[in-house]
Amino acid sequence: MNRLAKLKKYLFIFPLVVIVLALFSKNPTFLIDPNDKKYQVLASELQTSIATPTIFIPGTNGTVSRFDGLLDKLSKAYDDLSVQKITVQTDGTLKINGRLNTKSGHPVFVIAFEQADDGIDALVQQGKWLKIALDYLADRYEFSQYHCVGHSNGGLVMTEYLQNFYSTDDPTLVSLMTLGTPYNDVELAANSDANRLLITNWLQHYLDKQEQLPTNLQIINVAGRTLSQDTDGIVPLNSVLAGKKLYGFVDDYQEVIVEATHSELPENAQVMKLIIQMMDQEQTDATDSNPNANV
Image (cartoon, rainbow, N blue to C red; front, side, top):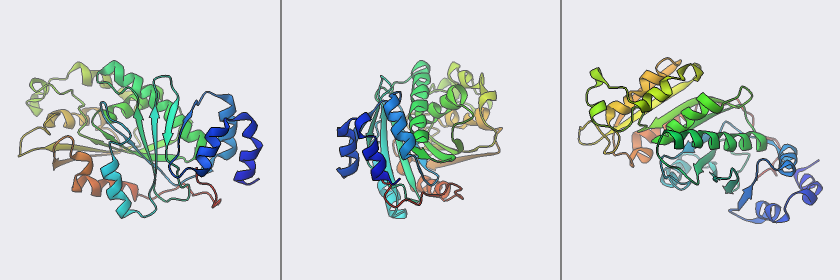
């Protein structure tokens, strides 16, 4: 049964407005309740294989527009780049913007949160919301692995998910690039001396569940510094590099220091090269053979 026939089959159980937007709008925006049984039936019927995607997660108060400059540059490197943006709302529903071309060799998802506050409790909640978004992606698209780029606290949100909400039937995270992530909080006193690092409650929170993190993972931990100062203007250099205490045991741990402020990190030229290298890694997921699949 082709895709259009499937849609017609399930029109009676899914809001017509969502179908119309998805089919005919150039840049559709629609709401989905992942717990809606009717939606789950439709998603399973329309599940389509895609190439290994890359997921971008912004930091505190970041929105799905945070990476627009970076994605514009990536579109020049990949003419088939296709982007879908997802905002997880506080009630667990998903606001989805954009139509993904499932034939793209470089699919991208940006996942942000309606309420993206700072603080451990807030990050735990965002890790839970990330799980909701990833479950939606796994229901709607077929892929076995993915890459992730987390800017600032976005790297900690992914860590929260890995430690607290990952399940063995979830797609596998193969590469995680964290940009200016404050693994040891942003306190200057705690991070003034790399040889005498004062482990904050922030870092200890993650170290306490370190055994929950996967070992078969590539970590690219990127830190920024400005005018040879040991900070990117917001996060101390040693706080970012404290990520080695958490992720140093994985199969491939790398540290990179670039000249950039905290907000400049996503569009830094060296960071862009690293992202492209990550996205160019061998992809094992096959794209779907259906040329009409494009939602």
